[in-house]
Every structure is written in structure tokens, then in C-alpha cells.
Image (cartoon, rainbow, N blue to C red; front, side, top):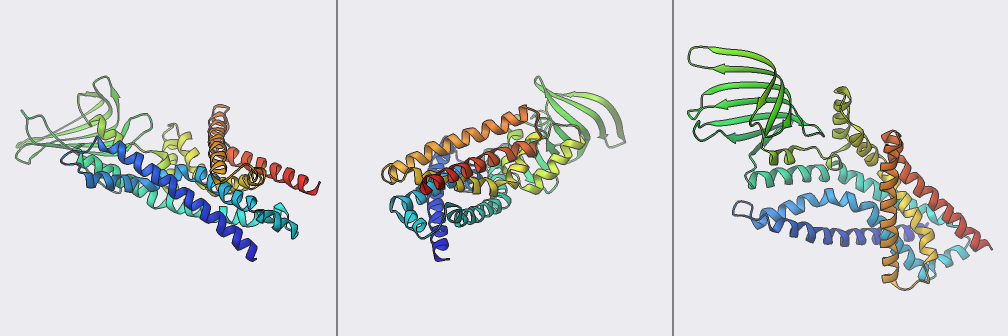
Length: 364
């Protein structure tokens, strides 16, 4: 039991330390990317706040890679100090040693899921909204159902325009749009409802348009199947409204993917992200299990620096292989569920094969 706790603690400490180093580097790079955006309204403090808020979301992208590198360094240190050899001489098989390693994978995977369901999506949303407002990108208010955008009307007309958008589809279309035009004195002069609108040349092509125009004497109503609009929402606002699968929670991904399916829109990217988040603990466990035989194979390769380099190379190779397997599976016509399951399954099988090979060498 004490050996299990010792191995568990070693793997957790090594992985969390590596994750901290990776996040520190990401923090610097993200801040450097924000420096050129700093203005009087988007101050240094807001730029730092933006980076801090987005960091949990980016951490999830580096989590499997940091897990593999950290566990390889930690387990490699145990192997280099002959501690794993001593454990095996006491009758501990590699299969038995993998138990605390897998337990560490479960804990790390659950921690990743917790961040992915709370801090990650919330931080990304708040950061993008805060920066958009500071940079004057007309974003006014985020509600529980869609977003509100406020824009100034042409100076020769005066007044303001308020636009409510239910969502932005992956193709850049906006759906469930309501537009309210106000005169300079605050009077509502026009209310327009659009079922959907898509960018077209220098404007928008709206469909299923309903318009109500208000004057002091009457209300004029009309409907049009299609209408070209010269302006609706500025393009930079769409970047803020765009739904990014990596930064959505499981519940948000489920609801959004269901909506796309009901409206015959492409939903594979969102289902893939949903299954990827759901299977994240298995991916982390596969990474840790893969690190165990490699740590034994590299115990005489050199010091911690060499093991770190081997871990980085191995981690990048696993990252590229996972992307190839995922995208290749989608292109081959597999379902998003199978495409998301294939990379961790392949890693797990490779890890088991390496473990059996190392066990065979030890027995020989």
C-alpha cells in the first residue's frame, strides 16, 4: 500500500510540475500575443486579465501532452534510481506497478474534466467578451439565451441599433436574429425578425424576414422570403460570438450538436469534441500507462534533461498520431464516437504491448 502511494504521489507531482511549467510558458506566449492589442481602453491590466482567464481553457489542450512528459520524467527518475527494479525484485510485476499509475490517471483525468466543465468554458467566454467590449467591438451584453449587440446607426440618421442573435453556425451564418432600430430621440422606428442570415459579398442575405415599421400614425408590417442587407453585424463581432467546440462544456456541446442535427447542419466537429471530453480520463490513463514501459527503456539514457527531451519527442509524436487517427477516422466515414475512441484505444494497446514486452525481458 505504501509503495502504491509513493508511486501515485511521484506521478502526480511530476505531472503537475510539468503542467505548471507548460502553463508558465503558455502564459508568456499568450501575453506577448496580447501586447500589440493594448490601447487606452484595453489596458495592460485587462490584457493580463484576459490571459489569466483564457489559461484554464488552453491548459486542457496541453493536458495529455504534459501528462505524458511529466509521468515519463517522474517514472524515469524512479527507474534511474533503481527503485522500480527494487520493487520488481520484491515480487511486484509491471502489471501491479501500473495500478497506482492508472489511479493517478483517473485523478488527473477527473481534474481535467472538472476544469473543462467549469473554469475552461467560463474563462474563455468572459475573456472574449471583456476584450471585445474593451476594444469597442460593439458587444454589449451576453444573456442566457443568445447575445445582444449594440451598434451606432449611420451618423446622418442618428440613433442606435440593437441586434439579438440566438447563435452562429459553424459556416458563419446567424440564426434567430432580431433587429431593433431606434431614432436619436429614443423612438423605436423599426423591428425586424430574421430566421437566418448568411454573409454574402459585402452584406448579408436574410431569409424569412418579418418587418414592422413604427410611425406616429400607424404600424406597417410586411414579410419577405429573402432580403439583402448592407449591414447587420460587424465581422469582428462574429469572432466573439463564434462557438468554439474546445471551449464548451459537455452540456453545451450536447445541446448545440443536437440543435445542428435537428436543423440538418454539420455537427461532426461538435460530437467529436463531446466524445473527446467524455473520454479524456481514458486518454490520460493511456498516456500514463505508455510512460511506464518507456521510463524503464530509457533509465540508462542519461539524466533528467535527456528523459525530458525523450518525453517531449514522444509526446509530440503521440499528439500528431492522435490527430491523424482522429481526422483520418472522420474522413473514412467513422462516427465521431469511434473517431474519438480510436486514439486512446490505440495508445492503450501500445502501452499494454510495451509492458508485456518489458515483462518478458525481465523474466528472461
